[in-house]
Image (cartoon, rainbow, N blue to C red; front, side):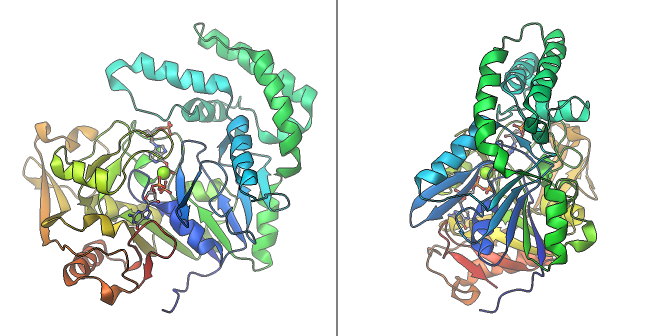
Length: 429
Ligand code: GDP
Ligand code: IMO
Ligand code: MG
């Protein structure tokens, strides 16, 4: 099978509401790249990789870690929680995977403190019935501090006295805003001081480093986290994360100029899932939804929450192609659809009889009680398992037709097709 020409710099982006299977493709492609770079998000992400039935879940460390010749960067657009990063590094070390000399953390990335996590929980409580259903990892409050120009940056850890003074003044400010916040600053500072010793060697000006690597012709894989529909600008706001999870965030979160990116692969699950609250037009609140959840193992990699499941929504997919300028698609988890008699594809949204041009910003338009109707195309299913199919031609005829129909509606080739969670279960078309 000939490999697609992806060029030197490739971005991988979630096209739906997350958990499309980004980690698996990053792990597989990592072998062909010199650098794997995370650009946005933090420990809200959970990227799962299986190697010989052993499961690894990456939250902050880029998913290239298992390919030992690959170097990794946590970019400036990320928010980092030091204790959980140290835990992740320890887990890898326990498996004999060393990051020494091949791992770099941007000095411009921001820190997530324990008080950010507490504020995340407090804010959710204050929202009552309008909870976002965050991962509770302090992501929103940490990005709020960044945008509010009071965040703590990783590079500040180099000068401990200055860092400590900044930390204390921030906390004093935050405690005025949240009088109910209970926080032990001495305990957290002590933990930071310990982790700092371990992490100092990794702190780097990654922006300059990446530019030099690009000029040297090195191959760079940019690992998106979260997903387009969770993007703070383009997603289902306010039911989104607090960063730009689409292509814009890849650029601001690494310092790589847009014109240097050669290919942008969208990861598209063969059906749709969402964790947390917010509108989900193609959701199946019935036994088919339950079938997808059980068969697809749809439980959050970060929080273990059951994922909401629904049909493939090509309004969402086309929107993701448009926003990100996708050049290729990796259709994932096609194997999970085996056994369904009919497979539905959402092709359009109609509100009060009028078809919408694209995904709307007004969330009220996305609820059936407000006159919203879905337009469907029904495709015949198949019964054969797909897990040993090694080429497109080996897929059952109806699975091929499903893929071709998606290509026709979405307007892009499904260059990679996932037929199982193992590294080998990826068809290149
Ligand atoms: P990510 O956050 O986008 O990296 O995705 P997650 O790791 O949160 O969730 C995707 C899940 O689907 C993981 O458990 C993967 O091992 C699994 N997975 C990925 N691709 C496939 C596939 O083609 N088939 C099946 N059955 N599972 C897959
Ligand atoms: P990966 O990279 C699925 C969702 C949360 C919640 C909303 C806001 O594994 O695909 P946050 O903690 O970010 O403030 O939560 O965003 N969310 C994700 N859902 N996969 C993710 O990442 C997610 N990252 C954030 O469930 O609805
Ligand atoms: Mg995930």
